[in-house]
Length: 146
Length: 362
Ligand code: SF4
Image (tube, rainbow over all chains, first blue to last red):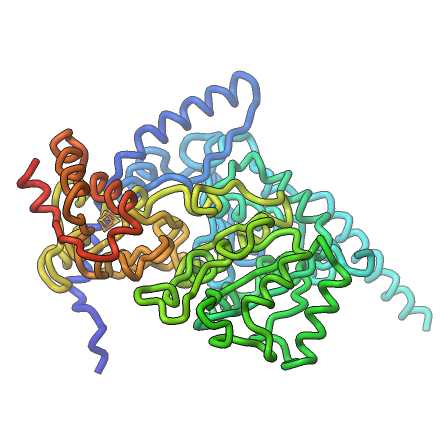
């Protein structure tokens, strides 16, 4: 009854064809990353590139991935949906992908930095954590007294 | 509005971490097409934003815009942005009706005179105001009355922005856009049939955090309507190579080729569909194999048929088109210029030209 179900073979072929579609934007982006890494090393300045801001085909994503590769850190964070933070094979160049609670892509960035901010514990969160810990301890100790 | 909680407090009660807020602001900046360097400013402004009173007026509409925005995402901070406004009147969503509802509107207006935001969906019939009334008040009177004390107006959907389907030929109700009636208030147009939910919330967030966004010549925020679908379309490489689908089930369609010849209005349509996409970024019409209808453009209903290639009317426009093609411009660019230049006149007596005709004549 499911007339919308595509034939497996055609859809696989189609996915394969589509995965090679490029816009030619990967190369200039890689050069932009090179310049940014230069700047990070020279003056310590961080650069963030929004991958959602430029037309990017599946073939471009493939080229980017091929050249940058996977580095030593691969972190998955659970913050209102998943966030995937990983260092690429070029140290100092990070991929940050945010997903929403239904695991759909929310935004994608390349960050050229020694340490992405989002990985660090945020001061407000630590303050809230301390408050929480104090409350729990007070509860515990209150319980013991009674 | 001291008794209205700030977003900061709302976040705390919802147990939202600072990190989650940073993630949200980064994604919001991306969606608003703002530089990642703006993130700290957006965060600061959003955190300290007081709850703005919003009066939502629905006129001649199909409720699609409201349906879209209320189904925007799973509960996320985006939802909270919606909570961070005080939706004081929305007759589709509110429990009260009739005079009780109108009282709520009047009360919100009195309390926040000069500060509230008016959101409108739907066109306004002016041929006979009796065509559409709410609690006995004509749409025209309600709009004028409510707009008087507004800080700004957001026209959501193509009907409010440009008249939409109500305004389509022969326009039996004399439907017009908000901007045809209100001339003395800032108006932000967020067209689309319906607009992408995240674009609607993005514009609201922009208004709350950074004020009125930069608008294009049609009153649309440039951040969302700055590029033509065609400029961002993943099928563009096929277009550039002249590889077109000729039917919905031919080989070209199966290979994912360009939909220009099936009537795609991507070259003349400015919208964020190709980048932001729909249903939480799953896909958009062209990705699903259907040509773009051009729903964010004025008079798209009358623009020559959804399944006809971009039309070139006879006369001067045809000559202009051929000259542009002969000059080396791509067919889509020529088509784009033409469709834009002829918006009003194109409604009637157009000729259809497809990419092959244009190629032949170049
Ligand atoms: S004509 Fe339509 S399908 Fe073809 S490249 Fe342009 S926007 Fe994409």
